[in-house]
Length: 269
Ligand SMILES: Cc1cc2nc3c(=O)[nH]c(=O)nc-3n(C[C@H](O)[C@H](O)[C@H](O)COP(=O)(O)O)c2cc1C
Ligand code: SF4
Ligand code: SF4
Figure 1 (cartoon, rainbow, N blue to C red):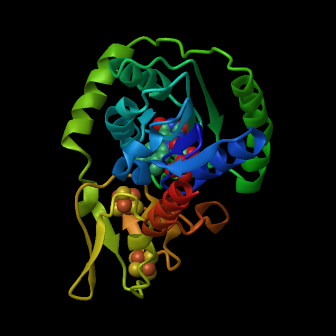
Figure 2: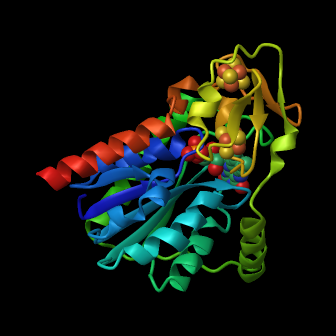
């Protein structure tokens, strides 16, 4: 495992794209998914420079970001430079401040934080515009972020009015975890390809008696809706058009297998 890592959570591929783009602009960073790191936090033991990349859901960080900070940061005993990057369609809201606060509770200081706007992944928020244009506009922003990080710059988010209250509410939501799964509806268009189950970062979608069942916990990332090739899933009767150009069919089981192979190879080498 390298001593520089970008740990990301991504529901529909935006944040994964941001992490990979940033890694190409920086020197020597390994990109690893947060669901995989939650299973293998020990992999972070030698990391000195760490970036946490996360999507904004309802003005707050996607819940796995908080799980990561709580259970993986204590393994980073050599940490020297910590930064966080939010992706969002409009505004990161309280996200960066919440991440800074959660890191502080683990005795780790965030030195730099910033955000990048990417296409909207929520079926309830509506379309954010042409996907290709938004990605093109995001590249110079990521370049500026990469330059700042390579100089170990310091930039911390401003505390907003109400931040303290929002952090309290967020913590409560986190403890009870999101279980909105009864609001998912599968239409007859479903052909049981299981793309949704393989790409669900929470492992919440299972096949039972030839049918799909949405179990707990659900991270509310809407990856399943965005990726379904048949547009067979809706949430409270709302659907999105599959955005295959950004949604890369993630297979978290495969990501974990690749990661373990890399760790084994490094041990042998
Ligand atoms: C449940 C949900 C809530 C969201 N809330 C916000 C929000 O409050 N502000 C915002 O700018 N974007 C919001 N978005 C859009 C995402 O933050 C944005 O599309 C992000 O880049 C998705 O990243 P991902 O593809 O890595 O999951 C929301 C998306 C979802 C699924
Ligand atoms: S991805 Fe869509 S079609 Fe495939 S199993 Fe899931 S709901 Fe059905
Ligand atoms: S069930 Fe859907 S919305 Fe919930 S975590 Fe899995 S992919 Fe995301």
